[in-house]
Image (cartoon, rainbow, N blue to C red):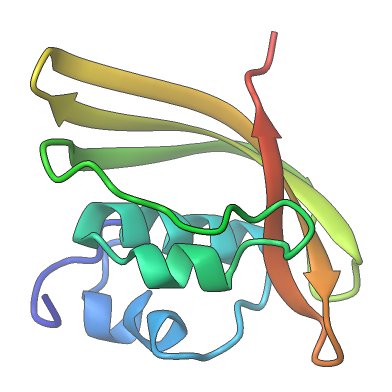
Length: 129
């Protein structure tokens, strides 16, 4: 995967993009965390998804659907979530191909800083109107 373009859509290789964050580096913003989480879905990294999920809303386990191929991420906008913020949200559309055909997920995800290192974590998401 390291030589391929990163699934998050930034146009650079996985090793220079989401790879370091999947290996433990902190995301600098809510949007970057959103992109790394999408990449985790694309590469099947459930452990990363759980590690970057707010402990107050995180499920005990997570099973990814191997039959779903995540193909494209569109970031539609973000509110706050920068280096000096404590919370933020990112609205996105993710496109996938599943056994039944095209899948389109549109969500407004909420993020907050957590723990002594104040790392960004995913809190929850809702379907925007």
